[in-house]
Length: 201
Length: 201
Image (cartoon, rainbow over all chains, first blue to last red; front, side, top):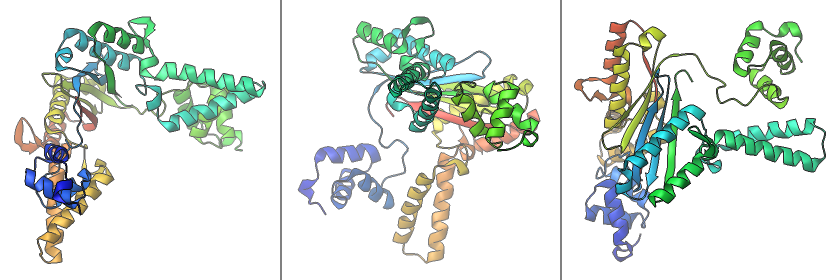
C-alpha cells in the first residue's frame, strides 16, 4: 500500500473529476490502489461512493458533432470533427466543413478515417486476394509485389476517408480539404470518428 | 467438389445478388466451393469477377435512418428504426417516433438496445462490483443474491434503451412507447441500432 505522501494531488483531482467522489475518499482509494486510477474507481464503486458512469475516461477536446441524412431517410452519417478551441468550433466555416465531411461519408462510404484505422481482418482478406490475383498473372515475383502494392494503394484511395476524392471537388482529397482549412483557420483539425447507417445494411 | 446438380438455384441467385457476377460464373464458383457462399465470393474476387464490396451481406429491411443533434453541436445520435413496409416507413408518425428515439439516445445515453446486447465485459464488471457490495452487507447468501439481482434490474433500467423511461413521458418506457406504436400502426417496429457521439468523449 502506498503512503499518503505518495499520492499525487493531480491524480486525486483526476479521480475526483471522474467519479465525483470526495477528496478524502479519492485519496484513501488511491492509497489502497497504489495510485492506480482504474483500481481506485473500482474500490470507490464497491463501497458505493462512486456511481457507475459511462462518462469515465472522457478526454477534453473541442469540436462539433454533425449529422447528414440523405433525402429519403435511408442513409445517414454522424461525424465528430475536432479543433483546438471552442471559438473555432462555433464558426460557420468549421460547421460547414463538418457537414461536408458527413455528406462525403454518406456518398463515398469509407470504412476508416485513415490507413492505420482499417481493421486488420479486412487488410488480410484483401492481401490474400491481391496475392492470388498477382500469382495468376505469372510475372516475376518482384513485379507481383509491385502489383499487390498498387492494388492496396487503390484500395486505400477507395475506403479511407482522408484519401478519398472530395465529392464536391474531385481534384482534391478529403485530406487536402482539411489541410486547406487548417491553413485558413490556423488551428489543427481532426476527423475523430464517423458512423454511417443505411437501412437494412 | 460438388457436381452441377448439387448447386441449388436459390444459392446461385443469392451469390449473384451479392456479387453482381454472371449466373455461369456464380454456378462454377459454387461448384468449386462445394456450395459455400463465402468461399465462392472469395473465388470470384480472386479471379477479378466480383469486386470488393462493402455491401455484401446486406439484408433487406424497411425503415428510416434519423439523426438528432442537440443544440450547441456537442452531442448527437444516429438511429435506424425498422418496420415491415416502405409505406409505413414514409409516414410522419413513424419518422416522428424515430426522431424521439434519437432524442432519447442523446438525453439518456443508453449503451445497448436490449439486455442481450449489453457487452459481456460490462456485465462482468458490474457483477463483480455488486457481489462485493452485497458481501459487505453481511447478509445471508440468499439475500445477497437478491441484492445483486435487484442491482442488475436497476442497471438495465438505466442503460438499456428499451427499458429506459421515455424522456417525454416518464411513466412509460421506450419499449412501451414502441409497443403502443406497433398497435396503432399495425406493423412490427424494431430499433435496429443507434450510435451516440459526444465531443471529446
